[in-house]
Image 1: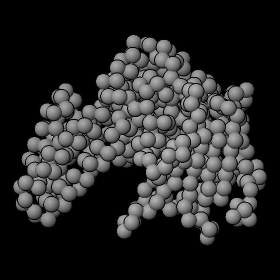
Image 2: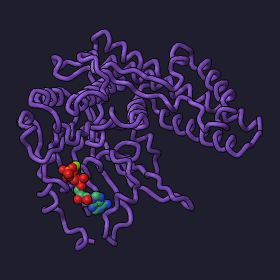
Image 3: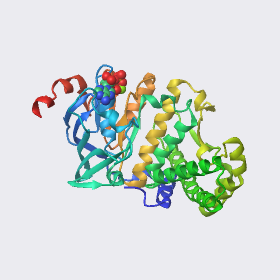
Image 4: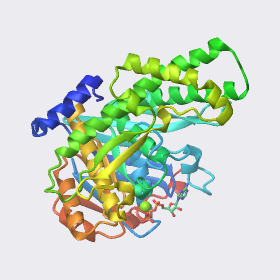
Length: 411
Ligand SMILES: Nc1ncnc2c1ncn2[C@@H]1O[C@H](COP(=O)(O)OP(=O)(O)OP(=O)(O)O)[C@@H](O)[C@H]1O
Ligand SMILES: [Mg+2]
């Protein structure tokens, strides 16, 4: 499911550059059945969907449970879901029976039918939780196994401020996109952050243990070089996919670039050299860090997006323009994953049509129709999705809740 190597991911990008995307015959992923228990405002939920349905549109008034349903689906892939919530916060409030939530689904991918399930457990003695994964009846699997079956791309209203918000939000966004191509990206990010935390603490404590400090600097170099390279390659892959957009210019095609975070020095060197560079920079920064509490590093990099047609940084674009830029990047990410891995991700677009003018809404619906995978959409009413009425399955979320079995009575 992941690109086997960076070379594979980059060659997919090169393939897109040379206009060969159409030749890829990637399979889509389709949810045919979804069940959730004790998931936010759903004590119990069961959805049986038409076979290989390309679009599911969830409609209903504010607070009915549209985003919650998308969040449940986002747990069919590794990670903390589209809200990045603490797992215990997902349990229905004021429901004494609820002790753990769970989500199961039957997925169609190519000719395969795959049953996946997930819940979580508390880690003994720690105030943290770990997801548990079941695939086709085999339990106790690692989350990465889910990533081999399917991935997901999502857009949420919280991302409307991606370009005008803090750089940390853009780094998290980029790292999530990179994870789709590089299976160990998230663990490399975690290893770098952990080493950075320990290194900072040692210096703040005035600890002069040379071996310990230099071991941490070696770790920072090793994982820092990997993370920086994978981010850079992800940007290259996305840019190549953006150039291939087939929307007659309805959506802007941003020019993406990485800025800061020693990127200028690292951009043209091989990974081993980059690792040595990062190690040495941290060693040289010990004194500065002790005095100022900052040393720089690859964790300070930022993702720049330029609205090419207007020659305007994304942060200075209008709300609707920023949304259109973001949608362009996400649709490019979907196409790039299909080219690199031979499998499309699931697409979860929460309130995607909000802020878009009529022409852009139409372009969005056309773009969605062209995807050969399942796309989930939400809106307070069905009007923006008129263009999908021949192919989409519409669900009024109110009805779903009204017709849900009485879980309390059943248990
Ligand atoms: N842990 C929880 N237990 C019970 N209810 C919850 C929990 N978390 C959130 N909710 C409630 O679930 C309801 C539905 O939330 P959701 O965000 O899915 O609404 P929505 O349909 O997407 O609304 P909007 O159109 O405003 O985006 C809200 O009223 C929210 O307060
Ligand atoms: Mg919502």
